[in-house]
Length: 484
Image (cartoon, rainbow, N blue to C red; front, side, top):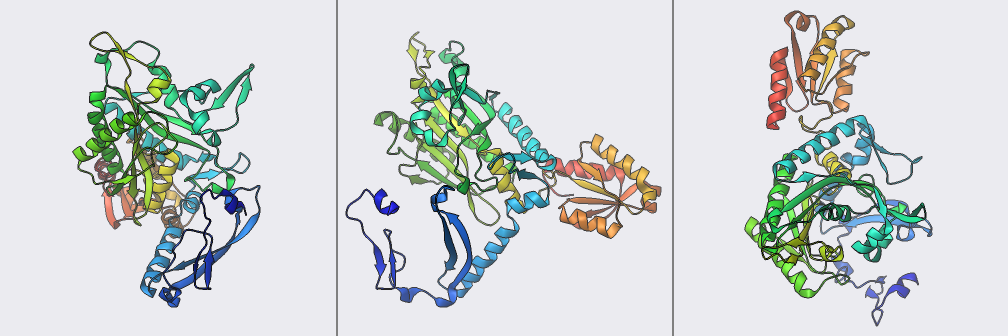
């Protein structure tokens, strides 16, 4: 009845196949049930599910199943599903001690453990380096602001259901930020600008908070607090095309660092609920098309899929299993500059409005980290691994040498750790389970010759190496994004 009440079109229709299958949907499923290959159908699981993902609504029983054209496709799907289960970032996050979601703190809030924090630090450092090289100024802005700010931006009108309740501070209403853009606009407004100042590029790893139903939360992929790799470009109208092309180049550079070279690109146009005149939308959409054509990327049009304030380019990256993940987004905005009344002085000494480009490359650090975990199945490449090498003494007699070696590697910028307390076979198994890229075994012979015997997760036994050679090989491999 709730579904029927929500249907606005007339008449209401029910799709059916003979007398065997009736469904309250548009259909079709199959033309005839004779097309279903009974050997390629499998019921998979039964689970409880809150009606429409709302914990305040009834719990229903959901039956999961799958159907394919032939048995080969079913087998391929089941293999894919097992592989996806093996790569599940929630399980690996626990097994490898990378992150957690603590019930005592509330759902959808991510705790980065030391190893996960190391990976985040590497991602952030690389992100800052690339942005600085490409002319962005880095910012830090508050997590809350007066509620009026979000009224001016339009978020209270268009995004209210995803925002947390307001809080009163000294008789004024404040709001946790769901976006970073109004803050960047306020920084722009702090002083007058000339046309000679453009383009102005600012970037921030800004943590935002969005209300999500508990039934929709999912590991790192759907959370309530996350850090966007956010940036905004203020430019002149004739600079839009080059600036978007620059963002596409930066996006490609950044994603290639992590091994992502396959994308699905969508150009999203004006949605039904939007602000701004049609001619403004036409200009913005045309600029995005021109930049994509300059880049030579193929793309699909997503009619009506734009943000309420402007059209956008969305980039989905393809992981090791061929799954697509929403990642980068680039949005041209003619509307917020008007809503916030930001201006510049042109060459004729007249006040004009700049163009604003919103963009994120990784999307959010939390979601991107989850994708990385599943893409590599927790087997991070050497340069990204939280622990790059584990030092394993054969007996306690080699401990002093191993301690000196561990410190020497750390001084050289290598993330190394010493592990003792078990017999060598157990130490090796534990390192394998923790997906440590390199193991350096030290026995009496290695102490005598100032060497290590190296075992690689990716290359097997690498033999005995001089300590200086071992450290040099690791540093070269990290620099070149290769294996030892």
